[in-house]
Image (cartoon, rainbow, N blue to C red; front, side):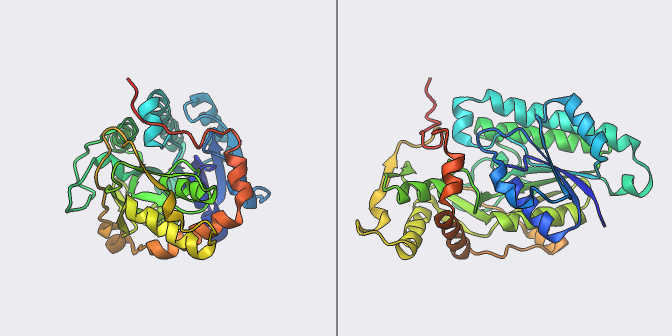
Length: 353
């Protein structure tokens, strides 16, 4: 079935991976709405830029008038909402942007989508979906055992996760109150090609390649579940196409590892792919002041998604890291382009009072 799908945040890391996957695997018309903040770059979707099925609109999702225009202009059949401020450290230093984009922006989109949905008839109304894409960080922190499920109570611990928890609740409420056909998904930590170097894996790669200290927060004992971004994109398509309206689906990579062990894995891959005369990249590991309120462990139980919709991740952490590091080694120009403002290397999130 051909659809016109609005993808917000499509110039960002996960959004661009989703656009590339949908462009290759469907005949859908793709409308990318992105404000192009520091983490959004059209170089990430360059391969689709000249295709007649793809359109880019540089707009802010908080601008209701512009969103109404876009919904009307392209006669949208589905929304995949990824636009968000997403870096925990930045949210600690400056929460205002997170409140505005993640909460007010989501509210604005829901209201515009509700008005649009109210005008649809027949099969197009039946098939319309609003897919809100979120994070496992809304659930807070786990101890040594257990995993987040779709029924885990929300306990966000950072301004970022609190803003995403709020947007999740808004999406659910618009589905319940106004019968907007909403889907929600919560994912674990994503990694892969085209990730802006402020998150752990691209930071480690970038620092290692420039022979700078590789920062590890605290003791590095924090545990995360890692999800290759292309696996996540395939899960998002699956949820949009086959997910039950009103349901939430967790998306995980089944790849739990402590941060310090992950950093050592990356150094090991770099030692094999690009050996240095100065010795192992592990020598660059440097322990730095931990993030305030740093959650100890996240883990995702994605059995609902696997059992109901038949999705499973393809990549292991080992195979995904190999692909990711190979991509960064082969694409230094992309890294230089997106970090040209010099902002990516700064330490943020120390919680200065």
